[in-house]
Length: 274
Ligand SMILES: NC(=O)c1ccc[n+]([C@@H]2O[C@H](COP(=O)([O-])OP(=O)(O)OC[C@H]3O[C@@H](n4cnc5c(N)ncnc54)[C@H](OP(=O)(O)O)[C@@H]3O)[C@@H](O)[C@H]2O)c1
Image 1 (cartoon, protein in one colour):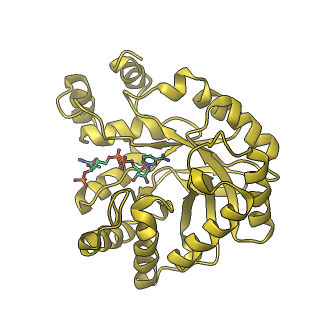
Image 2: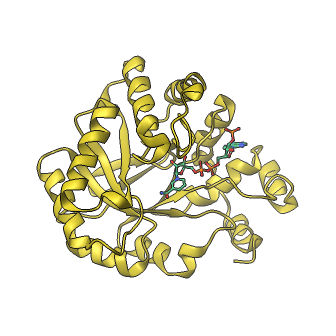
């Protein structure tokens, strides 16, 4: 596994997403067994970074992640756990309450990373960061970051955070370049902020794209792995694919070790007419 070293910490280039664990926007207990199996296999194949949110399955994804970690007997310090506060909870008191609830559901004393899930124009960022800074001081959160933030809000967040802002988690993949076009990806790379690329492999045409397939064959890899390697080959970019399938989970984790040539990278950059 390759890591990004930033602000004195090491974060795996590939983490595990938890959207659909325990349901989607609504908790669905009929998915518990399948979800716990997916979390256990992810821990077994070697994922150490897990991305979750209070929004996922109404907190149930956090509950199942906490349960899987406890059952695995893996030391908490060996893991890097990210959660996110929902935009409806960005007032000072609500952030503190949301964080405590996430910790309770996860059965953990601290979060490695706590993100503002989406911006909310109705609540001043100053108020949200007052709470986030306090959570860092209290040791409930080690690092803070944002998600789905444009350049203006990202720059403001950097000013308001009393500790270095660790990441902006955004949609970023071979065909998805909104955050390249709006300048966020380059700004992050130049200012020591991680880009956490979400939804890295969930796009149409991947399996049938002949160029992607040819590069995959050259590396004895799958097209999914090449789509991930294209991300992990970029400095300051990490990614968090999600899969219920243990084989896919392992393939995704292994993708971080694929080294693309400069020519392949150039071809992939042009692939979806960026
Ligand atoms: N901050 C935000 O607003 C935000 C928004 C969206 C997502 N996220 C985070 O990002 C994570 C990942 O994004 P995502 O879940 O939307 O999409 P994704 O990880 O790009 O794609 C998931 C889909 O791809 C399939 N898949 C994964 N690896 C595969 C492989 N190696 N071979 C074949 N199929 C594969 C999965 O099916 P199988 O289960 O069958 O493998 C699933 O259908 C989420 O879980 C969440 O943690 C954050």
